[in-house]
Image 1 (cartoon, helix red, strand yellow):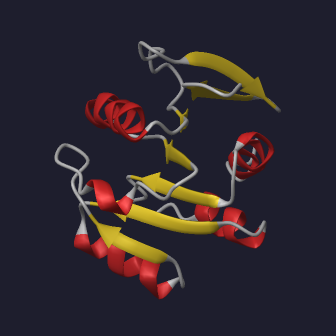
Image 2 (image 1 turned 90 degrees about the vertical axis):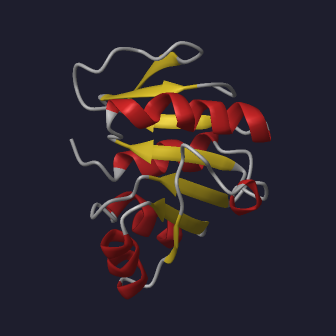
Amino acid sequence: MAIEEFAYFIAENSPGKRAVEIGVGFQLSVALKLRELGYDVTVIDWNEKAVANARKAGLNAIRDDVFNPRLEIYRDADVIYSVRPTPEIVRPILRLGRTIKKPVYILPFSGDPIPPGTRLVNYRGLAIYATKGI
């Protein structure tokens, strides 16, 4: 199953065309596919090398800390998503979504528990955690 399928899920379920990916790391395929689908995508990571790598690929990339996020980065987003985030950043991502009142979609590692406040959605064989709108 291609991870890019997650981009199609977001496109089919997002209320708009502005997306923010939290914890992008060095996996850019979902952000690049969303951009190809007409989205204005911003990717976020705390690692400056990951941010530089995303910029090199032509993405709008910002260094930020999800444990103490700069809310102005996220307020204009229509959706927040994360691809296989480490377990410790899942709750801060969900808290951020609640704070700015935006849906959050998480593509977890297999075996990650379903976070409180989300529901499991099966999309083309991908397990996705969604907060609302689905």
